[in-house]
Length: 170
Picture 1 (cartoon, rainbow, N blue to C red):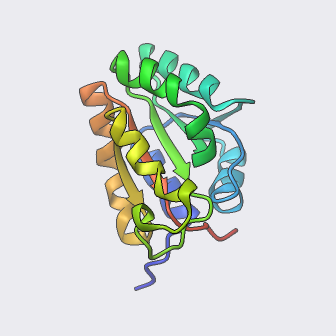
Picture 2: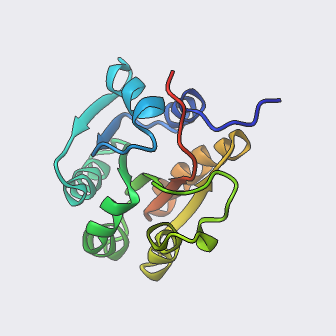
């Protein structure tokens, strides 16, 4: 079985979880393999934003009207939006779902053990603000997406899905 993480598998899981809106800032890790297909998918509404914290607010607001949304960004944008994640998503207990590309991560390496500071600090940063997270490195990790998103909405808590490997283009 091919255990390579790829965009079509992730996209299928996102749709199965009921995601209707994808808010994004371009991310080199997921751009070709996932973001490009999302931008042309007739079943999803794609909203491009300039800053990641805008995306946190948009996803939080959509949760109030029963619309499931996903914010896609890179870990550098996650760092820039930590106050919004902390205050809006975690502080108010809102189901803000995030898919975060780990630029610079090595596919089979635990990012917490990375030589790259920017990769190594990503998961602990969300631990510090009490945001649940999952690491997606191979196809076998994709089944965790639906329960993670369902759980975020059931408990009204944020969740982050880290993509730890560059997704190949279609």
